[in-house]
View 1 (tube, helix red, strand yellow):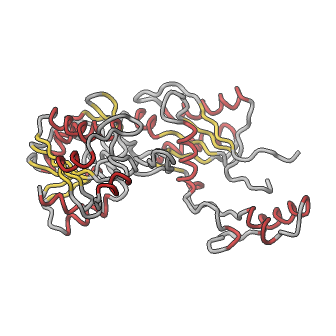
View 2 (cartoon, rainbow, N blue to C red; view 1 turned 60 degrees about the vertical axis):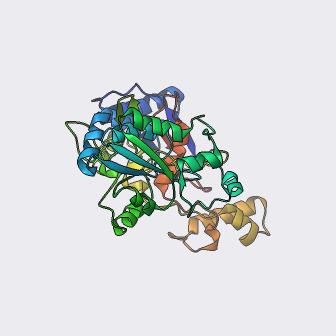
Length: 396
């Protein structure tokens, strides 16, 4: 009988992961137990995805905020430092700021406006327009910001991040000054030692600051990129991708985990005879239509993946074929014609009109986003996602 279901994404429950657990064994056993319990079969090219959070936990990749303070002090001098372009997040950045401020006498905090890098609003575009402010050129002091916009609480969290971040800096024993600007060079009017906290634009920001004569420029990826007094670290991303663990510690982004995905793939092949693909995923890449927030606060969607997940989709648009090439057909004749076109499609459809409207993104970003939406970030208890049928098409 013809299959009537395409892609299926399943959240797989597993035990609570602790440091030192054999994660590969846990993942494989959990997937196979779920298949037996729910009555589905593992197939070739199924995708098993594991959230970065449990990988970092199994690795024990944690650090106290004192380690952040020490690293910041060693790399930026311990005096007045500029902390620019952080995202507005209690979970992501506030705990890092606590550590950063502990390594400085004064923090000049420069916030981008009207939003941070991932879309969290300090003020709305309408407020900026009504105030006659040009965010690309106008620099605001805290006093001017309050005069124009007053107190602005985040739509979802209810937090006034300006006040919240200032208080964190002061509680850490540092002096706090706040400015609002979008040109990185503005911070050099206040200090020549800068920690830039943007995620995806960090390379450009560093380049601009260095060219403008900054004495020291670090990114979040340069802090805790090596252990400090035995702490966890991330050699590639440093503090990027970290989350609050306790009031005084962070969980870092997982370290090298290619061996993990290959181990899971091999165990599945040995136990089922099926060749599955495996990835470790972080934040998905999608935008909330109401709050305008991009989810992508991690430095990447795919931390590690097997080779079969490299590349981009190579798909034709069924709607285009039905409305153009085969507009005179219907019923079985239309189905047969489209099926034949799919079977005959070229290995690379870039520039082909039949592929217009398909999603030109990497497979890892697409599948990782699907997995992040499936697992959620709360109490679902499904840090493993099994995606089936993703590589199927209309002819399967």
